[in-house]
Image (tube, rainbow over all chains, first blue to last red; front, side, top):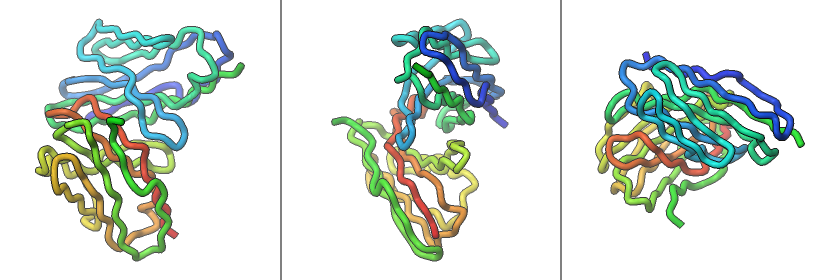
Length: 110
Length: 112
């Protein structure tokens, strides 16, 4: 069974304190790994797609990386507006659904 | 605005009632989904449709019946609502065989 595990469950950072979120996955074959951001009361907002080991994507203070077993979401010099739940998901097969992890709840304190 | 929109945003109802949630996307996508997010915020697939054809039907009680009148719409009808159905339901869409999916803002269903 395809599985996605995210850690930590919750993370509290001071503004400017860089850190990383982890997403480890077990799938039969990876078609894509996805990072989303979810704010309270809203739907997940797409951030990145990664397709193969070694791939990296960047957007503002966020950088996502991928290995054969895990992905990291690096947050550099976070700001309070980066506070949200970050969700990782994988697609294991064509027409397969996204399988989500339980998310990391990030709080950035000014 | 190009988006996935679902209505209503909130739905409060009594046990045993029947209710529907509507979803529409104007992105030109041909695959649509329903996901359920439980109280622990875990997001799980329920159904997916491609060009009005059912592709995925996870282990969901048959009280839940999706209907896709065209590829831009995927509605969810729920019969005989139970307390355990309380959750946030998200509609999403993607192009082709899945992958990058864009989500609606959710419908919070509360069954009393």
